[in-house]
View 1 (cartoon, rainbow, N blue to C red):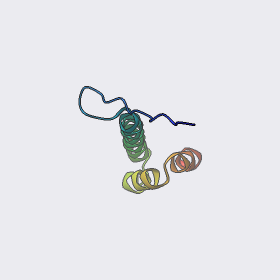
View 2: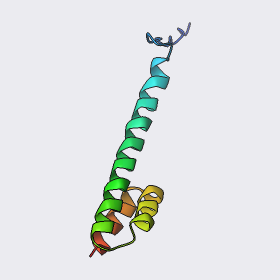
View 3: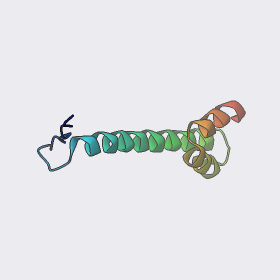
View 4: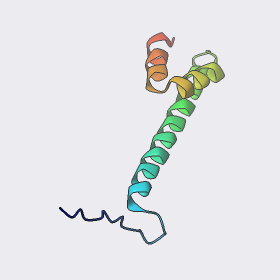
Amino acid sequence: MIMEEIKIIPLQFGFELFAFIPLMILIVWCVIAIVLAVWVYKDAEERGMEGALWLIIVLLLGIIGLIIYLIVRE
């Protein structure tokens, strides 16, 4: 049985299709994480909490850090 070669479709900018999609998902994920961390920082500062500490926690733990913050915020 002859196996056909899987062809990768190049995009206009030189990216390969299979490399471009995960890259876009990673970029969107990072942007969302940064926006959430900045929101947590501002919210924590407004509530008299350590904004920088919560910013670091949310950046390191992601959604789990956000859930912890939402539970313990004053």
